[in-house]
Image 1 (cartoon, rainbow, N blue to C red):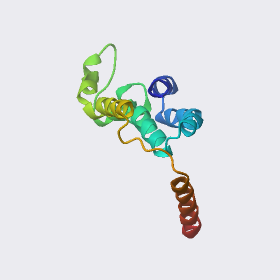
Image 2: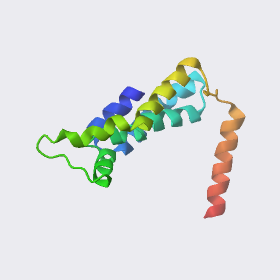
Image 3: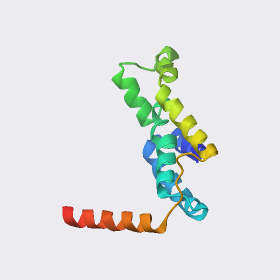
Image 4: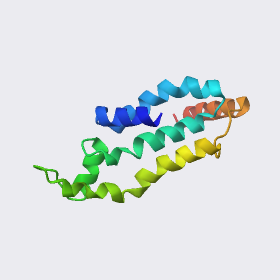
Length: 129
């Protein structure tokens, strides 16, 4: 999934594609393996949103470059030196892969929890309208 997120971010130019595409693509596989939807959500977050600022031509990278007052012009790559300092963006996918490999914090799906979550979200949306 991380590889699909990276391709979507690099080619799509926006982190939203890296959220929607892998979410739809891998949802049946997570369901088949019996994992909770929380695992899919966490993997999408780690691989999509947090990697976005590391790609300069992406919307996330453009926001960071603009907020820091940097610019990329005519081979002025010194302004990209923020990338190694964005340790949270690098560390989060590594921690997620480690958790998945070791089976830590990867809850299995339970039918009652999925139904309760759906019912409570429907109830909440009905009461807020």
